[in-house]
Amino acid sequence: MTPYQRFLLALGLIFSLIFSGVAGYIVLEGWSFSDSLYMTFVTISTVGFGEVNPLSTGGRYFTIFLILVSLLVIGYIITTLMSFLFEGQLLHAMRER
Amino acid sequence: MTPYQRFLLALGLIFSLIFSGVAGYIVLEGWSFSDSLYMTFVTISTVGFGEVNPLSTGGRYFTIFLILVSLLVIGYIITTLMSFLFEGQLLHAMRER
Amino acid sequence: MTPYQRFLLALGLIFSLIFSGVAGYIVLEGWSFSDSLYMTFVTISTVGFGEVNPLSTGGRYFTIFLILVSLLVIGYIITTLMSFLFEGQLLHAMRER
Amino acid sequence: MTPYQRFLLALGLIFSLIFSGVAGYIVLEGWSFSDSLYMTFVTISTVGFGEVNPLSTGGRYFTIFLILVSLLVIGYIITTLMSFLFEGQLLHAMRER
Ligand SMILES: [K+]
Ligand SMILES: [K+]
Image (cartoon, rainbow over all chains, first blue to last red; front, side, top):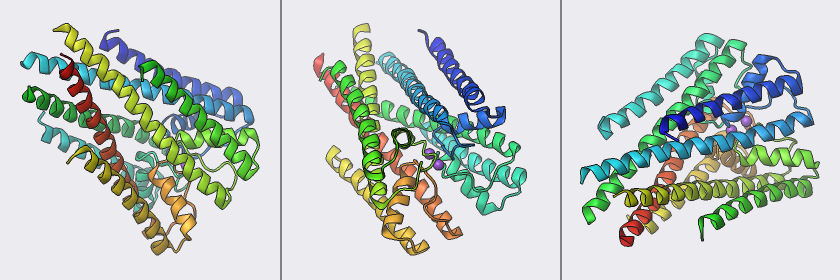
């Protein structure tokens, strides 16, 4: 994949994560759009102020799933960023010599 | 940009983030300076003890915005730090040979 | 260790951490499996919504221990990921010349 | 500084941070040792379950200070870890050729 494609993939992953979170809380818990969006951002950013409303057992397992996928996406983004950085620095260092 | 300019930019971004957070909570929610400063630090550090006072819907959207910008600034700072490290290490390794 | 062995070690560390967390809260606090699993994920991901139920002093010390080990495991995983990245990039750069 | 000295410095910084946090909550808020230790770990790990007891305005400013210093120490440790990694990898790559 080219850097541009990897950047698009990272953006796509983040939007899918936000969309899944919002849809999950609306469908599983019957929360409003505003509550579900806020809960999703508070969860995937790991800020974690607290559950917006009490969660059912199903909602808790969904939240565990959302946390797990968020950590994988964060890991992918950090790895991609670092890999751009190395490539750039190495190419720069090679060209300098 | 020189490393010094990038360091100044990182510092400037952090101060703008803190200032925006404090101003936002004072204007949108009518909170005290102390409450707004504490909420801003608890949010942008991702410590997230909990909302200092209940948030209006507008305040929630502002908090989502603050979280998003914080993550971008954290990403910029990590990338800048790593890029200094690579440059230093690579230059050192080249000079050694 | 080969990259594959280090990957298996990272997976093993994460599963041990989750298992220890769940077992700890069930044994020390008498919580349900669901409560203990949710508390463990909320803690080791650093999301930290809040304690699922009030903690005894023993449960607090166990939570401090769980946080400490989580940070060590996160550090190990980041270091391993970065070390894969460097090796790959360096080998690639060397082969290109 | 040698790697061993930097490792000792990192350990020293973490212990100073924990000691300062515990001492701060005992002196400023009159909390028990157990409450102060738990609050310190929950804060510096950014888990952030919530304040163990309500904080005075002084206690809030102390918590802001503790968060700030924690982020600096985390940044120092990540930078040190990465710098060990680069050095090791670069030296290894140079020796291979
Ligand atoms: K948190
Ligand atoms: K919290």
